[in-house]
Amino acid sequence: MAKKNGTDILIAKWVSSGTPAYKVLVCLRDTSINRTKDTIDASSKCTDGYSESLGGRKTIELAISGVTQFAPASGELGIADLRTDWDSDLAYDYKIYSRSADANFVTQYFNARTASLNETYNDADVAQFDATFAVNGGFTTVDPHA
Image 1: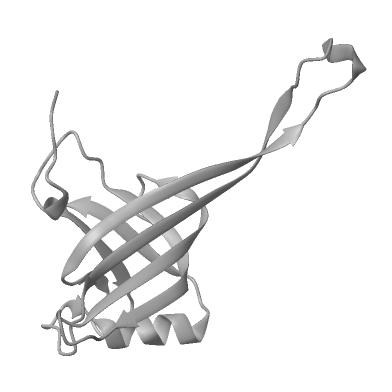
Image 2: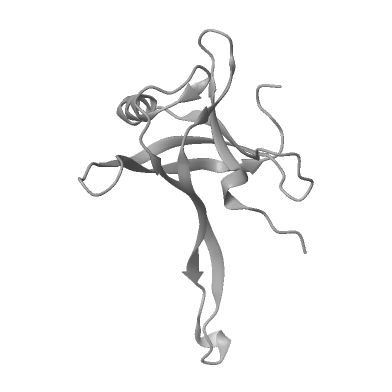
């Protein structure tokens, strides 16, 4: 079984201004993908006392946390970019990918808006952030900008 180090997984946002390209969200610590599906109660007297359910609406959220970067390098995105995205309430194109070539981790593309952004500044740790992206639709392996 192939294993993957989580530090090798990156998130990048499509930026069309200047030279269009995917720009990486820097200094991530954690990334998680949460897939949920509503269930619809389809029980009736015909189900002999057993419950039955149908699949309902699917929801995908991608959550990240990281060390706050106030001055990211060229080609990278930091906290100011996340603040702008949250404030704009627009959806953007992203990709989640492996830093190294790996046939076991397929690059996935998605469209999402920043649903939440939390910044933490305390005297016992470096400045940090947490953000959640509400994914529109699902993931695809086809780059919408190729």
